[in-house]
Structures are given as structure tokens and as C-alpha cells.
Image 1 (tube, helix red, strand yellow):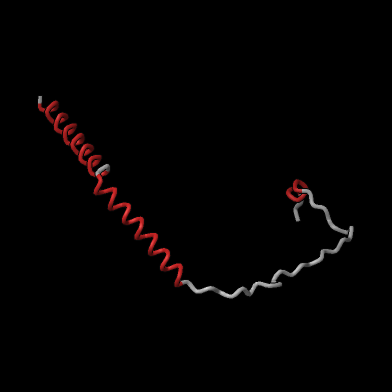
Image 2: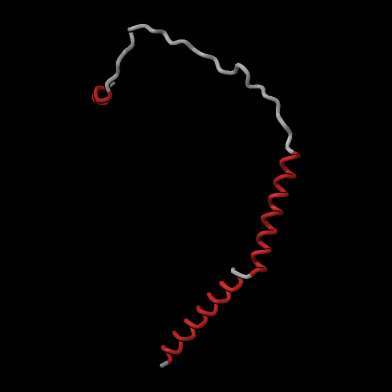
Length: 87
């Protein structure tokens, strides 16, 4: 008997919690507050973006191209032969 009453109390508390959470989440006041906070975040991003300094581009001609020798004296490596050698 006590066990059934305990389960009933747990289920009712859980159901009340879900009902009140859903009621608050879907309420108009919560939607207005969340919309206002989204607008405030957008305004803050815009004000910080205006204050950012623009850096000068100093990356012109930074890449150096190296020509490889086209000689045929390259040593070809085989993976399994490298594992087998004791060197």
C-alpha cells in the first residue's frame, strides 16, 4: 500500500513539473523575453563589429616556389622492404 502511494506521489510531482515547465516555455512572456534577448545579442555584435580594427594586408608575395630536381636518381622505397631490413 505504501509503495503504491509513493509511486503515485512521484508520478504526480513529475506530471506537475512537466506541465508547469511546458506552460512557462510556451507562454507569450517567455517568447517576448527570448526575442528581446536575440535582438540585444544582434545589437551587441554589430557594435563590436564596428569597433574592430582593420588590419593591413602584409601577405603579398609570401609564397616561395621551390623547383625540385627532375633527376632520375631517386631511390624508390617499398614499405614492406623497409620493415624487413635490419638497418
